[in-house]
Image (cartoon, rainbow, N blue to C red; front, side):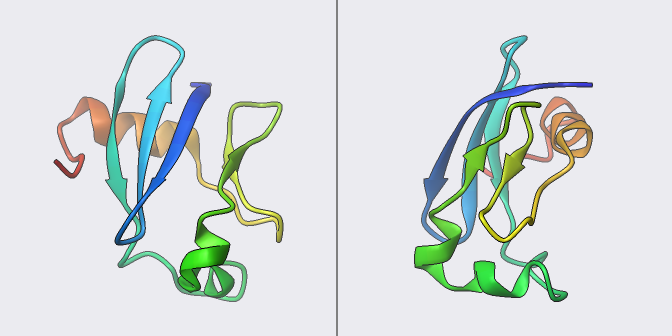
Length: 82
């Protein structure tokens, strides 16, 4: 599993993400915030509470999290947002 070592919140529901092997880039979640667990993240102040848990997974206080493998694959394939 790939481990996130840095996450920074950017405007427009975007995150700057760095992995332990040096892969890094910006991902956009503006079209992915649906469903009960992700609904609170539509509030920019709540979205800004993004953190990294002990497993290297981006998460929020309400239990929402993002699969690091999918983010890694997107960044490696060039699907990041410039």
